[in-house]
Image 1 (cartoon, rainbow, N blue to C red):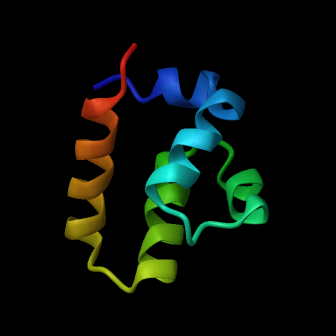
Image 2 (image 1 turned 45 degrees about the vertical axis):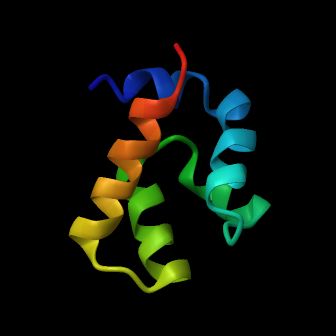
Length: 67
């Protein structure tokens, strides 16, 4: 997977990210700024999930995006 697409289009992607993970704030999204590790860390923090579960959630979400 090429996460660079997300990083490069982060401003456009934030709406889709918030649709999927509504507990993330605008400040969270600004701090994440397209960085996958930051996104996974914030998701763990907000949703209380394990690292491997969050990684799978992000992989699944990424796979559903239409590029």
